Length: 109
Length: 109
DNA sequence: TGCGAATATTAGATATAACGTATATTAGGT
DNA sequence: ACCTAATATACGTTATATCTAATATTCGCA
Figure 1 (tube, rainbow over the protein chains, first blue to last red):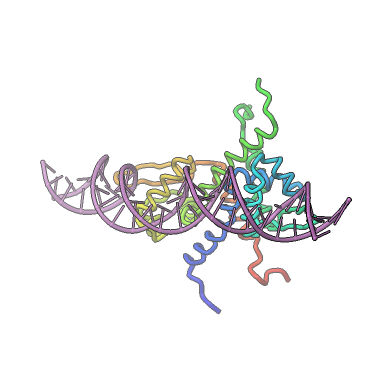
Figure 2: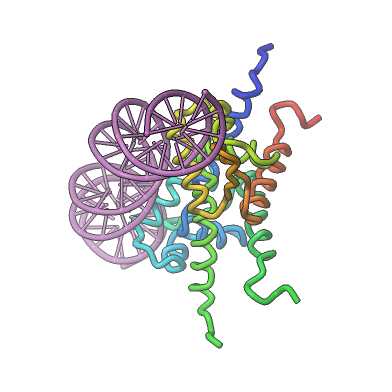
């Protein structure tokens, strides 16, 4: 077996993490994922939710698909997207938690 | 007091989160933060750790500083950086956990 | 087969990111 | 005052991201 240099190892890990974080590091995609964290949604629903052009949403979904973050299910013309990566899901959850733990100016008594 | 539209609220939250995630969504910065999560480090140490040019490291630190993720302390010519944002720290910790929970092909018996 | 609805893809414009090279700043020592 | 070490900034280049407008695909239906 191969001995991995600890720095190369760190680098490889950081690389994978950075790739996942890039998927999340966008307002519109976060909004979409927020909706998808509650279950499947059609493209149309995401278009209405975000207020973006259909093309833009489709491209964002393409980014998430390419990154393995989401998967699709087709029902006739409609395509239902869902979160398909455990890492993405857990990071997103952690994000939501961290978000909730924030003191919105006046929470600390 | 102001009534905030739930969608605007979501948008605002997503925006802040995306901004933080952008800070983390880079291999070199993740490596630096990994080091900083263990305590202060000088610029020079981060240069050696990452293998980047000094200028590049300084610019990355500038990004993190502008985003409020890190803060500096000066001791003579040397500047010691540290993580200065609780949200960043907790997201990074969550990231490390999620990273550890991964099965590197053969963990599930 | 021809049409409309839902979605994807392509092309092009603009913005932002990341890096290297070169230069500026700032503190300590001689 | 001068020199060096440690760090920051400016600038130019190349790559990547995101959006709009236009076009293509795919499915179900008359």
